[in-house]
Length: 143
Image (cartoon, rainbow, N blue to C red; front, top):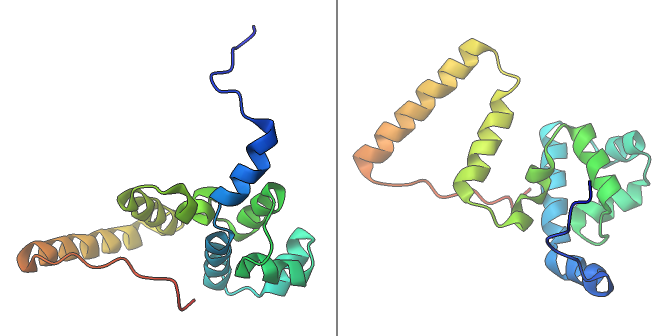
């Protein structure tokens, strides 16, 4: 069965489009955040996915543009979704990003811990309704 393409990419400008469209510094920032959450060093990640320490450092600082295969290996090793690593580039709804993060955080929790988290979210919702303030989205600039 031959499926027609709805969109034929412009191969001549594809690399230029990708380079201009992706914020590699933001990707590196998300990688660094995920790595630190797991208390891993750059050297440990680099060794595990078979890249040099220097390249890993440059990926995290945005000095090197990470390729798709390397990004997938990093995501698998750090056990994070590609959405998370690309979230600042996806221009998605903040509420969806937050929901995705909550689901990832709660995935490995025991049921009793999930109920405690639910109670905390309920308390936050009540407090927000009472005081009429919405917490600001935290910045990762100090990571």
